[in-house]
Amino acid sequence: MTQAYLGLGSNIGDKAAMLAAAIDGLAATPGLVVTARSRDYRTPPWGDTDQDWFLNAAIGVETTLSPHALLEACLAVEAALGRVRERRWGPRVIDIDVLHYAGAEVSDERLVLPHRFVRERAFVLVPLAEIAPDLVIGGETVRQALAKHDATGIEPV
Image (cartoon, rainbow, N blue to C red; front, top):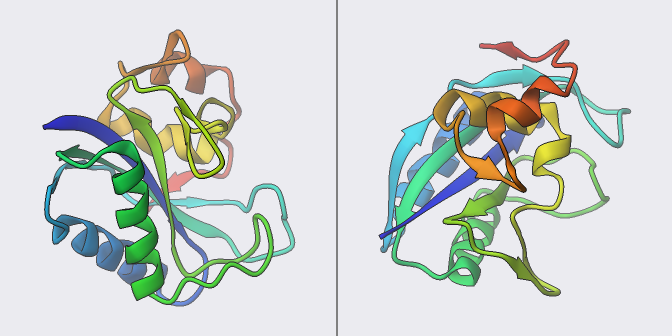
């Protein structure tokens, strides 16, 4: 089994129920076991700020899936929950990102690992720091990366 970390977010409808359904869908995926879950965090929108606030969380998983198969499992859960990609950084019923996969470095048209923005986004780092503060990504721990950001407006629910 390989350790990986995923980030989840929702800002349409019952956000908490959507995060829970996504985690349940991932947990039901063969070859994937959820090992850790952060609290849910209310976060302001990032990028495209003309939209509702988000609920974000992070989970740790152990998996026998390859990085690309894990991405496909995440996309399948998103699709099953009604995710439609209309605009970049826009509103979404659910978003599941592969943040880190046991130190793997991948960069192709489908997947970049570690996630290219993981160390730049407080809304990802806050929940990830709750479950994996000492995880090293890009030469620094999640805790160290988070210390460089303003987490104002990110509140546990």
